[in-house]
Image (cartoon, rainbow, N blue to C red):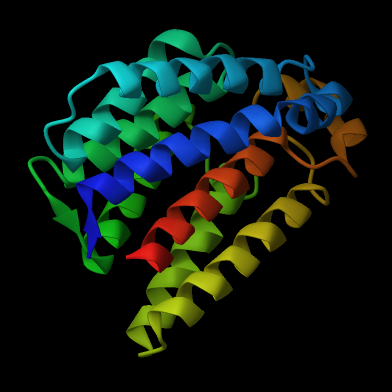
Length: 210
């Protein structure tokens, strides 16, 4: 079981990871976008960090809702509303919870993906963050259904997440700013896919610590 304290610690650690990797995210976005994905994400998670520090968190749902609302109001570009949607959907699935288990986590991921697909009018194969969210989630659910250990399931899910990012290099963008480049977007990884890898790694680590 993951406790509220572990979730809060994970959010703080994730904020640091995004901040530390902001230049890498900018570099990826420079090739196919406006070179500001890292700037936007850093601004958002700096705000998340300070907001979490100044907010009395009532439960796990409240923690994720705080993240989602903060990202919604502080991250520019297409990624802000999408990540806000993901964390708000997380919050819906664990409203009032003091702990979350693997089943809840799977429900959180399913809800987040459905929300982002609806919000972004997108799906897998469009060279977006969904090319990481979806294989990570499917792998986690399949590994758990097959009775593999929690640690192995999380490890294989992160392999799928990294493969999803690599896959984003091989397809033409059909959504967002990168779609204007057409075939010139080939060979470049999607910056939203890259930041998703960072987020999912932090969430995987959260369950490893439980």
